[in-house]
Amino acid sequence: MKKASYADKSIVVNILSKSFINDPHINWLLEESKNKNKLKIIMGYVFEESLARGTVYLNDDNTAVTLWNTEKKEKVSLQYIFRNLSFLFRAGLKTTKRCLKADKLVYAQYPKNSKYCQLYLVGVLPEYQGKGLASTLMNPMIEEMEMKSIPMHLETANPHNVKIYMKKGFNIITTLQLEKEKLYCMSR
Image 1: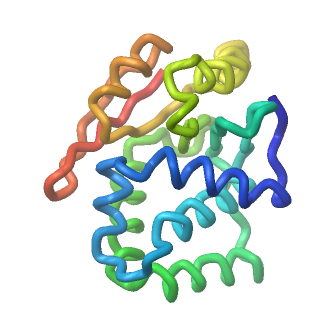
Image 2: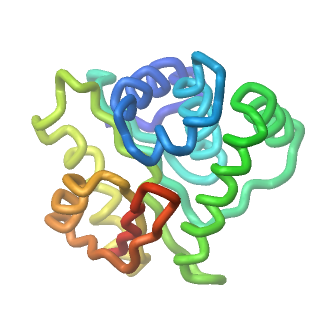
């Protein structure tokens, strides 16, 4: 396992794009966008956001990735402004509004003015799923946060994933209804 850097962006975006191609939440967020590269656009965006707000881990074979965010607020910089404007112009206004609305609902579930760690995304290339790669990438951070008594959060729209995360000690704290989809907010 290694910490990813900006140089790993294309690898991470590839893994996430292939992993989330049928994800109900991502597809709902992007359904209004007309850009044929919309999945890669959002995955590039979240990768850069996680580099600024947390840590990205890749496995040694570049077949699995985890994106972890913290309570840390990203400072407004030229890079921040460029990333956000680029997303707006490439994904479209409706998609950007939808993403902001979903983020606002999710982050309202988190504690205010205290530390936390968020498992933002886990991606495993489809041909490598079911081999424990996601767990291998998640376990060190779970252990570290447990030792530091820092709460962990995540969201998933896939009911199958709820069972997997429950085995890791996460519990559903609330379920958000976003138009046609449910988003399960979980904590540990």
